[in-house]
Image 1 (cartoon, helix red, strand yellow):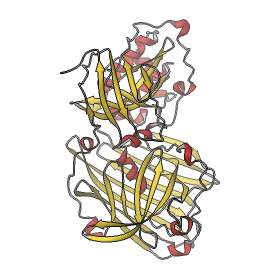
Image 2 (cartoon, helix red, strand yellow; image 1 turned 30 degrees about the vertical axis):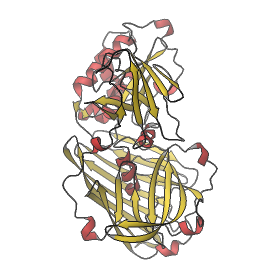
Image 3 (cartoon, one colour; image 1 turned 120 degrees about the vertical axis):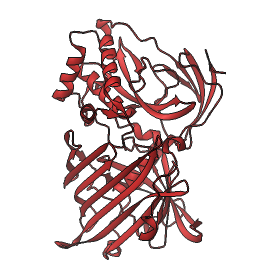
Image 4 (cartoon, helix red, strand yellow; image 1 turned 90 degrees about the horizontal axis):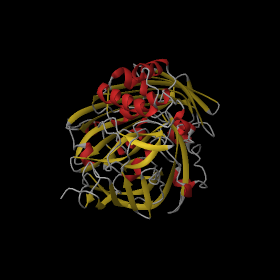
Length: 488
């Protein structure tokens, strides 16, 4: 449901929301939400204010009522709006979800819209068995796909009366799987009960049940009353969701704290120069999450990361060009539409008669850098929409370059991590390409080939690994130990 999607989206800024289960939680039994459904029969309307810093910047309203055409079924409607300050510009976001649910809260069909300053999407889907067939329309392109589940998909609600029965004792854990209409992906989270806790909320003390929710290394906390209604939820990036009366929840401010500044990564030590050849970082990382820190130009020993800047080849050695054993880096995917005729034609027009992959990379990188207007786009970054809209942030740059490069036969990945900007580390996305059997970095947002050694990679993949970045927020610390050249 988009209320939960919104919380995760804010936590990882606007990266795609794919959850990978923490390995230690795989054997936890599945949550059964079929109990106490009668408690949800009455009409409900719940408002939640979204707080960031000391200001209310948005709200969500959730309505659940019996389906007028079949009173044993339900209609779920959610609407949300918020104002995000990104690069000192207010970015208004609106969302709307309608879902039809059966008597056990299993999803039957849905429609979802998401609109931000430079992006909009409309998605519709229908459940057949354990699959959801959907259509996504961005206004620039239409994507059709199917996602599969191990059982009939759910949309979780803010009313959770089954929690107290299934998690009666502190330390009890359960898994819950559901469909996320924003990322259009299945997701599984683990919920743990921690017992009663007193919470001071807007001047009043509430004795609430405390739970934590884990997904892909990220950890949120939520607090419910005795009936299972969520009263408060906190996210790693500092967002707080409070159950509030309508008149309070909808009283939102025009601006809040600067988002990117709030999630900047603290560091100590002397900054390396942008043209430095190598650097060593000491990293403080969250526990229980596996990152793509080791490999290519990055070498990890314990918590010390050594990063060597590559020498990008002037030309390719054709006999070993295809020696990178990674089929996914050559394939089209939902958001990296390397097989689309427009993508393929554009790539062919850019490279022309040039056959050398190393030279093709430079031409494609230059095209992406010069073509896309640099703007923060809050939405799903797909290559075809980025090519036609001709604007975007690092995610759109990385997605478009990956599609064009793969269309040209060059193995390409999306790297996610942090990079330096104005003396602070910020979360970022760039690319890696395989040439002569070696992976090289490049950043089409900043026009760097190769990327400088202040690009620290934590994830590799299309969109399937990017949620890992969310687990770093509030936990990652960086100490610059030594570089071949540094800024005093």
